[in-house]
Image (cartoon, rainbow, N blue to C red; front, side, top):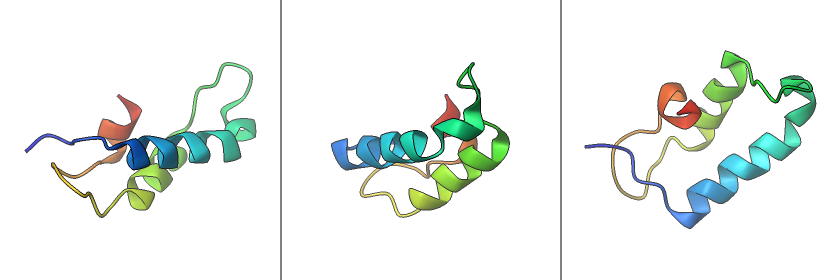
Length: 58
């Protein structure tokens, strides 16, 4: 099944983006390591499929 995003999931992703914004640079282009970190933080979905690094980035 496709990933399903709860409000809590979005909050986690936004908190991570804020915490790691320096690593994204001025263009806010996060590297693969950030997306892997996000995927790991969201590895236990409440519903839907897994939130892989690719899914988090898209």
